[in-house]
Image 1 (cartoon, protein in one colour):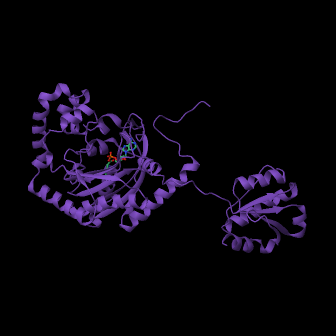
Image 2 (spheres, rainbow, N blue to C red):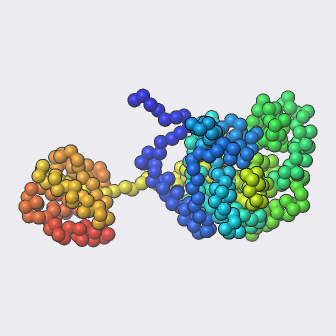
Image 3 (spheres, rainbow, N blue to C red):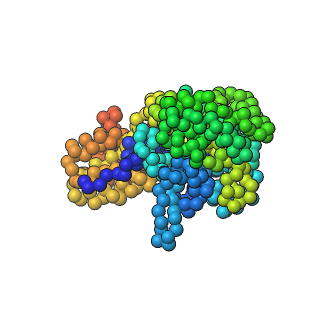
Length: 421
Ligand code: HAM
């Protein structure tokens, strides 16, 4: 074979799709309970949506986007995240004027040209929710609790919720100045990456995974000390509401997140079951994004969670059961003449809601029975020339080993009763 999948992408094969479907279904049920409705956006957008939305100097925009020119020389980008496209869609379709708050959720593939490693892919999937239209600590809390609710419903435990507030842009500018003052005499001790971030985006230094940098960061000034009274009040309210809802959290004063659109509340949920890429979920408030897109002031808050990472945690906690897949009926056709009737009968069974299959190779009874066993068929319908003459099937119950003859006109009702036993 001459072709391989692209580095950092995955084939999700049939023995894995069952757990994906279970997770997706659970997410949909949870979102429905919280009254969030699904939104789907295109796989690619005008590059500006991300460049403006996420921020030119972020890793995602500066290094990781799959950007290309179409035939009309327009710069397009495969979506690396959902928040910017969801906001674009809300503004473009005027959803923001139709109700005070739009509560939306999504499940989507995303694309980032990162160095692939465990839990870090180039095509990955997220589910997430965005509450767009209102600035309220109650919505910040609801979004956090909703993410936790999905994880709890799926059985995940030992998750760590870290929260912080990044305030408004003015407070952050003041904070950046004092951060730079702190970093400057230590720059030769920081890694190359941090040195290059010093001028462009000093806040990102706080996010460095390098051990020495992390130690050096421990004495850096704290953003919470620079917040405006309004931001502080909002943060206090979120903490109170989380406590009231028995949601345990840690304040992580250096949590700044890797996307530029955040204001006030930010959070991450991590799991010890993941390696160095330990964040299963990230989110926060982004009150200024709509204005950056040329829209009216539209406060919003949301979260997104990696589905591959979620599955890694489920795997580590032995929450993934093997799929118990079986057939209701295996149609065993004996002889050329009978084989012609096969398609008709199979279709009759299937439209009656019976999960049925057959052999397509005119194999021997023995080979067909072996196949029926391999496919865990509950019942086998034998149709040979004998049966055809008598206008009946020989029905074999595979678990009991018993055998009966059932006439053509009674077979569907018989099977339906038998399968529902
Ligand atoms: P993010 O932190 O970039 O935030 O991504 C959220 C989650 O997506 C991560 O915690 C991780 O589980 C997963 N993820 C990110 N990159 C990869 C990757 N390369 N491979 C596998 N999983 C990955 C956002 O995307 C924001 N839009 C979240 C948000 C929503 N903020 C407000 N609303």
